[in-house]
Length: 444
Image (cartoon, rainbow, N blue to C red; front, side, top):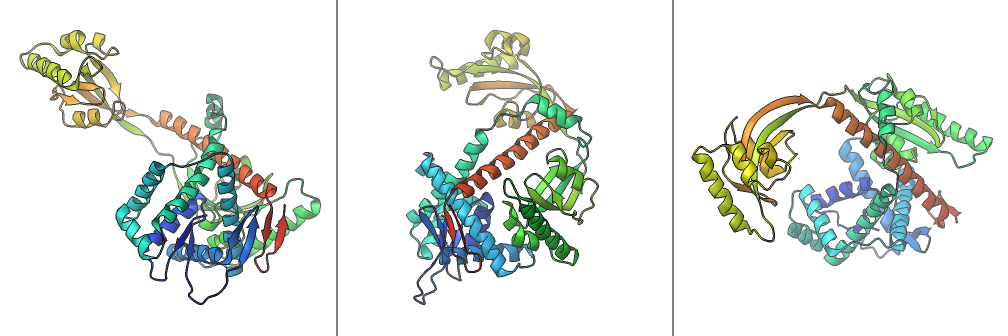
């Protein structure tokens, strides 16, 4: 598990790091040296590992800091502790399963991850190291903790990679539904699960629990606070925030409950095969039109390969440039000299294409050209090039964008459900003994 040992005067970026890691499913924990000689206690056994009271206390401190930063109401501390402990348990199980299935990370992987964290906090990796070491933590241990976080993430990615790809038929069905152009909702939820094969008594007890939460919301309890306190979904500690979804990217029961709901409103308790939900609409936006600027150009390329060095390619493209400056026809030269087999016979014509089609170097070159203008020779990984701008146009790519978004939404929904299912399976199959006062129970 990730353990960040901080004092009360810790650098601000480290608090930001906690906020960065926790939403990823990790268990970033702030371990604080109290200096009073107290003996740590165990709050949970997780298979053959343990979670300590100090780990839980400082993980809670990190979440409290996030809640205050968002300006939300603080839930009761005993409920917050129970939620955070459950998150630590799930993360510990992920690390254990990752190790068992051979997931490892290299030093280079860790270096790249640290760079991304440093950039997100506006500092360099060296500044990060100095800050970590100034708080009394060995940087090699810090790197090891980051490695465990990455292992948990990679385990989830492996789960997703094992899923079947989204088919064109699934996309067509989604787009043919009545909600295909109904805009997007920013939503949050409170979720209370039902165990598999629930008895009528269990269903009734869960119904009473969700009804009581709904009553408190009606009486004025803040939704995010209620989610942090009671929700059993993975996004509970983020105030239940799911984010932007259209009604095609959520299950039918969810869409039926949300459809037409105004921002700020929340639903009555809704039953699903997994349990009970209360859903809140935070915001709404209409479907947007996607208009892309496309370019029409032609080019001549001299390829760099085993026989043609970069220098020889450059010398050849310079000779071609001189011929163009002397008035020779671009298309004729492309047919004679260009090594791009897909365009040479077309006089170098690349057709109409979006900005990203041929890479950043080509795009940046086109930006500096007027219609009919020929570029100076430039180099890419493929070789040396000369471009001629032929024209630009605005193209409505809304339909294509909608299909791509639909495919991504279907995949995201499936991935969320699959990861949730597998993590719940890990939890059900593991031996977990909770020793947190007031929440003691055990399972194996």
